[in-house]
Image 1: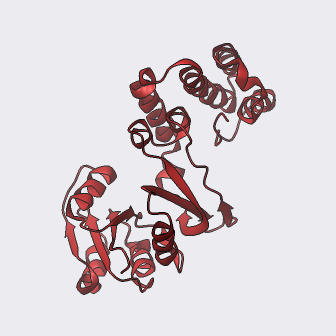
Image 2: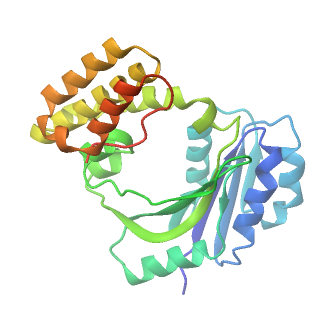
Length: 265
């Protein structure tokens, strides 16, 4: 018997894309499926679209919430599946994704946490396959990714297959709020960094300094970029041989534009 799959979609005023997201879940043809949509009280056509598909939904609600994470957590509280995932309301699953994931878990019964590859796309943008870089340690996760699962001893595994398409558009958080991502990474690192030790702790701290160096250089402040780059090198000399260090050095030499996307490693 196949595992029951619970999917949560958090949404707010994404009516332009929401139906495509919903269809990408339902058109998988996967059973047993529990699909939950948590809408934050949208004022566009979102509720009308959700009602169109409500007979296929295990649960949905449209009410004011505290944002994306709150919506996802509300969905998790309702989820009863063996496997859980969420997809944002402007992204889509690729055909066969659910069957591939279920098959992986069936053949790897000890797996607790799985990630696959992603296709980045958007109007006026080149479509790009992005291979997932699985966080190997809490230090790695604190550099750029999620950390609490790793700190609690859960290992992430990689399914070498594209499972979803990640849409880039003017209103998406990745495009519109990229600076906030950097700030959130720093807050997470500062919160959990003390649970690391030795080289891992220095690595995590140096990564924060590299991000600051890159951001300063990209904004044209080469002096500030140099200062953070030197601090990174002094904190974790091993990083001098790593690609991100040289990326920051090239950005420092080149001046403005762009942002860092890689991590120490």
